[in-house]
Each structure stands twice: as structure tokens, then as C-alpha cells.
Length: 367
Ligand SMILES: *Cc1c(COP(=O)(O)O)cnc(C)c1O
Image 1 (spheres, rainbow, N blue to C red):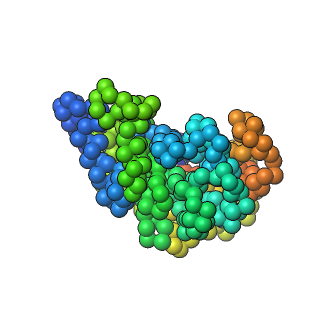
Image 2 (cartoon, rainbow, N blue to C red):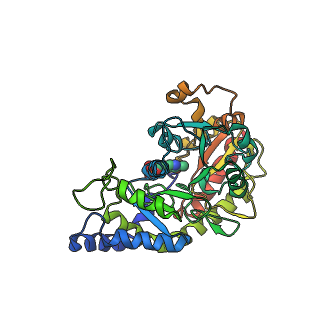
Image 3 (cartoon, rainbow, N blue to C red):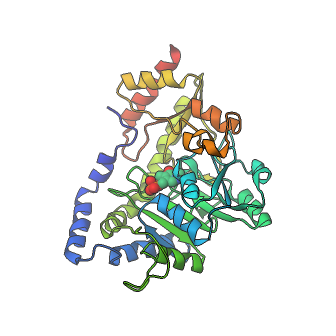
């Protein structure tokens, strides 16, 4: 079987180092908000060139906490893309605000900045662009529009650790950015985790307060908060993985280039063009297919895993029907969700395995 992503191999490659890191945490006696969390936050802030990094329980909480820290709630609108994981919009609804979906660009699969202005109203407070599959969104245009209307911009960078936009790292492109350390993300841990990064001192202080029951002094509470912290054990695992992330991302890029070279001439298949000023880290490698489900079945019969991200755009999700979204509102995202297929990519996918995938796709398109 060739899995979409081989996490056993990835974490297995660092087995002893991870075990040592975990043993270090056991011996330290500090399990919540200890020295490893502090070290990870410091390293993250340094690497991304931002003043603050605040670790939290997961990427979804990272989004919720940024929005709440900026006072976004009932009566406010937040613009995002319909072609993303549910949490990008769930975070908005969780605070009682309304997600507004703006269609994507057919080449980048990211929020189309040319459609943004038409959706901005008096109620709009923020924009959440998502760097989908690891490719940075069109941040300069988005920031320019946000400045014009005085809107907050929050990068949903959950799929894009290590990516960059015109030489600047993802995470340093807006008012705040949110990362997830869910195991399958390109920088992941053996469980849940997330982090917020920002240059906004006040936002950082509020998130530190909120993640810890609204308290900075033990048993004295200033606001109603959350229990949303990154465990010390996960910080230690992430510190172990962090030195490898650039190499892992490079391998993803090499595999992506190989897929592109060998597949793009095939009929019935399209691959999004690569943009020269974007450093895409291929959290996922997705292709577009005229007969997607047939190809998916053919791959499955050969023991090759593939997956559809995402089969239903968010504006058509059952839970959001109350928002009045309907078929035809976001035609690009709707069409893409019927054509898209993610094929195996991971830093530990062997070239021979990739050749098997390429071969199977080629054969499936001949019939
Ligand atoms: C994974 C993901 C999230 C949520 O992260 P969790 O850590 O699973 O809560 C949010 N947005 C996007 C785009 C994601 O891929």
C-alpha cells in the first residue's frame, strides 16, 4: 500500500530523538507551559521574524483566539475562502460572527483578491486568507484591500509552515498567522497543537491570558478564557522535528516537480501552474481530473491511496445553510471540488513508489 502520507516513516526516522525528548520532559517534572514551550515559542518567533509566538492547543483555537482577542463576535462579518478545511470558518461562527465566502482563483486555489471588494460591507471586520495545500495566498493584493477598508488580516497558515511569499515567510505576511501541528500537517506532532504568531503586543498579551483561563496570576481571573495550551511533551517533539522541516519541504518540492514533469502532458488531467515568486511547500499535491472518481478507484485497486480535499465547498455545507449560500455562488470552488484529487506526497515517499503512482495514473487515463 502506498499511503497519501507516511507518518510512521516520518516520525520513525526520528524515533530515538523523539523518545529522548519525551524522556527529557518526564525527568523535568514540568508538563504544562514549561521550558520546552518557552523555547519553541522563542524559536518560532525568531524564525518567522515576528515579536510574539503563543502556542495553543490546536490550529482551530489559534484562529478563535486571534479573532476573540481582536473583539470579533456577533454582528461582525469575516471573509474567507470556501475551499479550505472547515475550521477556517468554524472559528468565525464559534464566536458568533458570520463567515462570508469569496470564491477562489482557478490557478492558485486561493482566495481571489479581485472578488474581495464586492463582498466587503459595513460589518466586515477581517479577512482570513488560507495558504491552501502549502501555497501562499496573494497577500500583497489582499493586504492592500484590507488597508483601504481598515480590516484585520489573519493568515490561516495551517498547511504552510516553511512556505514563503516574495522572499518573506508565511506567518509574517499579515496582522497575525495561525499554524496547526496536527500530525498530518507538514510540521506536526504526535497529537494536537497550534501556534499564533504576531507583531501586535496587545493581541499577544490577550491570547496569553485567554489560553490560560483568563488568568496571568494563578487563581485570579480577569476574563472568561479557555484551557488551550500546547503540552510540554508536544513542544519537545516539535523542537526535535523543527531542524528537519526545511529538508522535508525541499523533498516535497522535488517530488512535486517530478509529478509535474511526468504527468502534465497527460490528457484529462491538469496541474496548477507554479508561481515563480511563491515558495510552495506542497503540504498536499493535488491534480485536477476530468474523471476524478474513476481515477481514484483505479488507484485504490492498485493499493495507492488518494483523497479529495475538499469534496464540498464550505458555502454549501449543511451547517451553513442558514447563511443562505447556494450552488453557483462560488463556481470555481464548486467545479474544483468535483475535479480535485490529492496523490501521495511526503518527505519519505521513495522515487520508486512515486513511479508506481505515476504509472497507475497514466494507465487509468488510457482506458
Ligand atoms: C488543519 C487546519 C486547521 C485546523 O487545525 P487543527 O490543529 O486541526 O485545529 C485550520 N485551517 C486549515 C486550513 C487546516 O488545514
